[in-house]
Length: 161
Image (cartoon, rainbow, N blue to C red; front, top):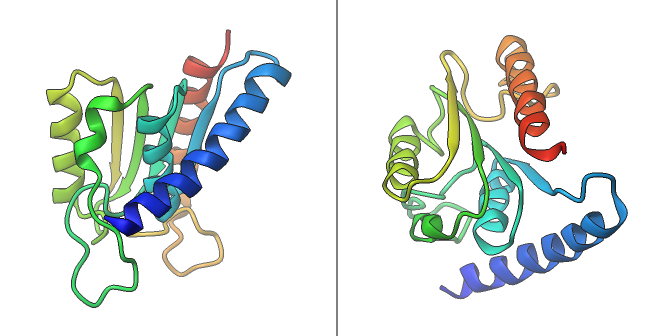
C-alpha cells in the first residue's frame, strides 16, 4: 500500500501539473497520456486520478495481476481504480508478453466493460514486451508501426476539437 501511495503522489502530482499547464497554454486544451511498461501503468493511473481526455497504455504491467514474489517492482494491482477512469483508453499489447499477460489484459478489459468505459485494445501476435523499443531484440517493426498508427488515430479522435 505504501508503494502505491508514493507512486500515486509522484505520478499524479507530475501529471496534474503538466496537464494544467497544457490546458491553459496549448491549442485544444485537451490532454492525453501515453506510457510504455511501467509508464503504461502510470498512464492508466493518471487517467483514473485526473480529468484527462485520452490515455494510451502500451503494455503497462501490473494494472491487473499480482507482481510475482522476488520481482524488483514493488507495486500491487490497481484494477479497482477502473470505475474512476476519466477518459477513453487505448491499450496496445504483445500476445507473447508475461507482464501483462493476455490473461491480465482480459481481466482489465472485463473491468472496463463492467464499468461502461470507452476503450480500444489491440494485441499483436508474435510480439512480447517492449515491441515498440527500436533498440531492443524485442522490437517488432510491423507491430510498432501499426501501434503508432492506432495511437495517432486515437489521439486525433479524442484530442482535437
